[in-house]
Image (cartoon, rainbow over all chains, first blue to last red):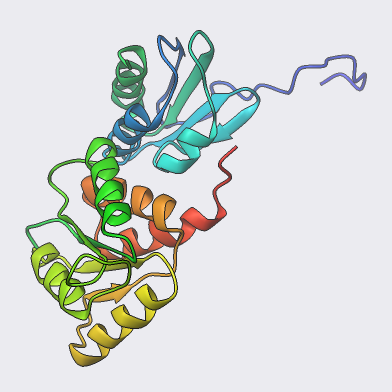
Length: 103
Length: 130
């Protein structure tokens, strides 16, 4: 650990957890409006993993439909999905699929 | 508890309640019973004891029912109905009408129980729209 704070990036504690982690970044084919937000929130609630959605510097829990809509994510921008937990891989895949196929 | 938590939308305007119900059908799912109770018995602006009482019965699948009033006499009339027919699993919730209903229907569609649906509706007040 260097005493010099010349690294702008945050420390990255990758590989220290026992629970599986997964992440994927999706470029939105359409605005993240009410209908896909509803689908996303319902899907997110079916997994045990802790899931996060990141967009435009904000991070939210996708089980909250209003929080998903509040991201205001538009066509062509990216959303990063991360998950921690036993079903992290399946959770990320499921949510990425909904985002990638939103109309 | 086989069915979904039910949602009753109480508004002074039949169109407002019905329209919100149509929006919920798009965002949530057709497995959640959403019943509109808007306007008076004869279709004017106002609220109806009978319509609200009937809507609660219709929305009840055995997992409980939340009633979302828009404001004013929607709250008062709903309270009168619930005072006359008190049930532990039917409750009026203090939440923003549109946002609370959207949060509630998604939570109910995901299999949330009555407490989870009530919490989701209440929390809608604190979620920024922008």
